[in-house]
Every structure is written in C-alpha cells, then in structure tokens.
Length: 317
Image (cartoon, rainbow, N blue to C red; front, side, top):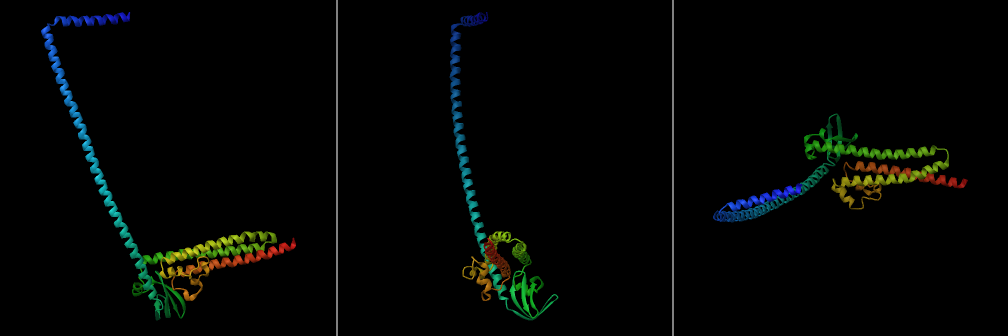
C-alpha cells in the first residue's frame, strides 16, 4: 500500500509540471529560458572571479608567511650572534679576572715572605710583651714571632695598621684562613685519633688470653692498618696539592724530588729542615705525616707481634 501511495504522488507531481508548461506560452517560455541561461552565465563568471580571488588570497598568504619566516629567522640568527659575542666577552673577562687573582695571590705571597726575619728589639701586642722578636712566618691571619720568651703567634687584627698594610691583610681573608686552619687541624686530629684507635686495638689484642685468637685479630688488623696508611697518604697528597695551588714554592717542590707522592710522609720537604719553606700550611702537612708514621709504627709492632705468635703457635702444633 505504501509503495502504491508513493508512486501515486510522483505521478501527480509530473502531471502538474506538464500542465504548468502547457499553460505557459512558447514565447514566454523561451524568454524565461534565455533569462535563465543569462543568469547561469553571470553565476559562472562570478564563480570564476571568486575562484581567482581565492587563489590570489592563498598565494598572498603564502608570500606573507614566507616573509614572516624569513624575518624571524634573520632576527633569531642576529640574536644568537649577539649572545655568542656576549658569551665570548664573559669568558674573556673571566679569564682576565682569574689571571688577576693569581697575580694578586703571588703579590701577597711576596709581600708576606718579605716580612720574614724582620727584627724588633721590643714589641708589645695587647698583654704580650716580646723582647728580641723575629718574624718567622706571616699568613693571611697571623704573624709568628720567635722571641726571648719562646714562640708566639699573633693575630694580624691585633697588630698595627702599618703591619696589616704590609701583609695585605683583610678581615674577610683572615676569617676564611682561620676557618681553613680550623678545618685542617680537625682533620689532623682525626688522623691522630685513628692512630690512637689502632694503638687501642693492639692493646686490646694483647690483653686477650689465647694466642690463636690474638693472632687472628692481628691478621685482620695488619691489612686494615695498611689501608688506613694508604688513605692518610692520599689525604697528605691532597693537602699538599691544595697548598701548592696557593704557594708557588710548594708547587716547585711538587715538580722535583722534594715531594714523594708514593711515601709523602718521608718527603725531603718535610724531613729536611734546609728544604722547608717558612709558611703556615706546613703544620697541617706535618700533622698528617706524623699520623701516618704513628700508624706505620703500630703496623710494624703488629707485624712483629703476629710473627712471634705464629712461630709460637707453630711450635706447639
């Protein structure tokens, strides 16, 4: 039924169209047909212009984008060039500043070394009175005097402005130097404590009653002491390298036979007083070297004790 109804409607529509066409005179139909064709031509022309404008707009957009990309690229290249120039300037200034720092450190070393061996018949600093005083060492924070009453280390901050000026003293550098010395003394104290600990271990081993147990403890102790000596030698070499960067005379010793990196505690720089320069930093090296020698002494005692124990144990087996 639905299919028949649809077909019926289509038929009526076609019939209505035929009736309309039949009702319009031929001349009017042809006129309308001409107007329609004219309008169709105008539409086609307009569509052509629209297509041309669309293409022109697209081309212009491409050209504009290309111009923008070129301008951005040029601006970026110029900015990168300026950045590289500034970076080069910064590196140059940093190099010049580093060179000036090194020259100033050398200048301070020369000034302070030049004060050594200066004599004062009488010198009073606060509550300290020194007779026949001789300057032995000048650091960033202190001056060491040898006098009739012994050895005294006086803070540059407590001395006169003339001596402060000659030693190129500043409160900031003096504070940093004192912190540095405190840290190094603490490290030297740790090395000494390690040696004492090794001694305590040996004493504890001796107190044990059975030889076998003592021998086993000694077998463990000897390699530990060897490792401890290696670690302390590394500390001593590190301390020397750090001071060598500050003092040119130590740097020269590092390039000669005066410093033995394999056994730094036995270096001529430390054991030969004729080759020792007068400077504050050697106290740290002496303390570390003393710690190594103390551990070596304990190690030799441990080896001797172990040898005796093993011979004794072998004889009882």
